[in-house]
Amino acid sequence: MTSSAFSRDAQLKSMELTISKAEKYMGQFCTLLAAYTRKTAKLRDKADSLVQQLHDYANNEGPELRICLKNFAEDLAMVQDYRQAEVERLETRVVSPLKAYGNIVKTKRTDLKRFSADRNQEIKELQRLEKLRLRNPSDIQSITQAETNLQKASSNANRSSRQMEETITDFQRQKLCDVKRIFSDFIMVEMLFHAKALEVYTHTFNNLEMMDIDKDLEFFRNQIQISGPLLENTAAISAVPQYPSPTPSTLRLTQQLSLSNPIRSSDQLKKTLNRNVRRQKDMYEEEDDDDEEEEEEEEEEERSDSENEEEEPQTFRQSYAAQYTTTLKQK
Image (cartoon, rainbow, N blue to C red; front, side):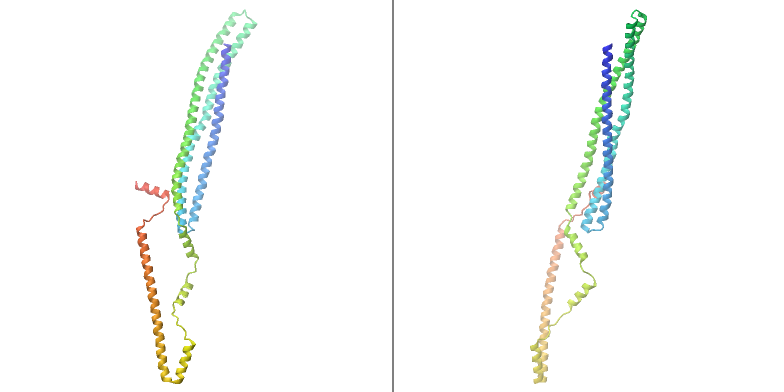
C-alpha cells in the first residue's frame, strides 16, 4: 500500500505538470494570435485610408494616371474585403478555440483536486494505522478498524486514479487534435487571403504597367501652353499677305522715264506694275498649290492612321473588382 500511495503521488505531479504546461502555452498562443488578429484589423483600416487618399489624388491628375490609380484603389479596397474575412476567420477558428482552453484547464484542475483529496485521505489512513501499531499493538479491534478504513481509502484512491488517468489522457488527446486543427486553420486562412490578394494584385500590376506616360505628358503640355486671344491675334497678323517693297533701281528707272516722256513713262510704268502683279499672283498660286498638296498628304496620313486604329482591337482597362462585379451580374 505504501508503494502504491507514493506512486500515485508521482502520478499526481505528472498530471499537474501536464495541465500547467497546457495552461501556459495555450494562453500564450491565445495572447499572441489575438494580437496578430488585431494588427491585421489595423492594417485593414490603414489600407482603407490609403484607398481614400488614392481616389483624392487621382482626381487631380491626367487621364492615364487617373484611370490607373482609380483601378488600383478599387483593387486595394477589394483586397481589404478579403482581409476583413481573414480577420473574422482568425477570430472564429483560431482565437476562440484557444480562449476555450481557459475553462477546459479549470475543469481539469477541479478533477485533479478531487483525485488529490482521495490520495491524501489514503495517506492519512495509512499514517493512522502505523501509529496504532506502534503505540498499542495489542489493540486488535482498533487496528482492524484502521485497516478497514485504509482499504476503503485505497479503493477510492484507485478508482480516482483510473478516472484521472482517463481524464488526463482524453485531455492530452484533445489538446493534440486542437493544436493540429487550430494551426491548420490558421495556415488555411492565411493561404486563402494571400492567394486572393495575389490574384488581384497581379491584375493591378499589369494595369499599372499598361499606363502610357507620354499621353499624360502631352496632356500636361497642352495645359501649360499659351492659349486664347493672344494666339488668335498672332495668327491673324501672320495670315496677312505681304508684298515686296520696290527696289531703288526700280524707283530711279521710274523717275527717269517720267521726266523724259511723261506719256510714255506712264504707259511703261503701268506695264511694269502689271508684270509685277502677275508675277506675285503666280508666286502665291504656286504657294497655294503647295499648301493644298501638303494638306492632301496630311489628310491621307490621317485616314491611314484612323484605318489602322480601327483595325487594332481597342482595350478598356478595368480593375479586377469591376470585372469581378460584371461577372457576378452576368451570372
